[in-house]
Length: 200
Image 1: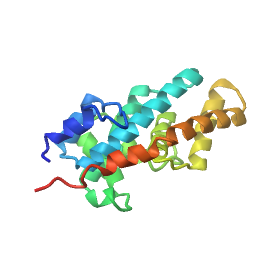
Image 2: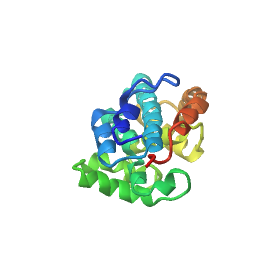
Image 3: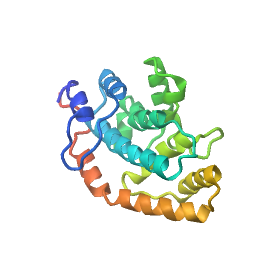
Image 4: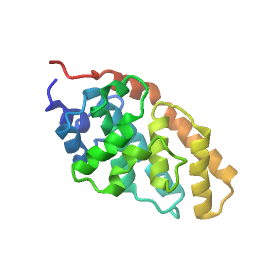
């Protein structure tokens, strides 16, 4: 593979599972930083789940104010720092978070959009917005990982926006996340079909 494969992974038809293309700006950034193929595939899977969550929120809780474009861009770039710390693609580590934010800022991305690289694993930090929570949620549920603390924070935002009891929102969100989670094996297989590094 060469760097020219990044736009293909980011934008072309994926077949099964069908994944939405990444935003063009995100795809261009990933090509510029020579993002590894598996990273691009991961971002595409998370972005697709984020798009499903955004659509669900817009349908079911239109009173919840959120920036859908920011969520989608954030999901599409949240792990871009792993281009600088590729060991974190296959192992634990958080160095990619601050590195990703700085990388995006260096490439001219506004702070309001670059922030997701640093907040996607910090959903309890001060100043976290609903957009950050949705990116974090997408980054978990794409592989069918459920994090009750994170889901409770999302439920609280939903309940606060329209006044319905939290338990009702919990049930609705749980049903949606369960349905999204059913596609996890296919998304994981798609991600794993891409190599960690580019062949020399």
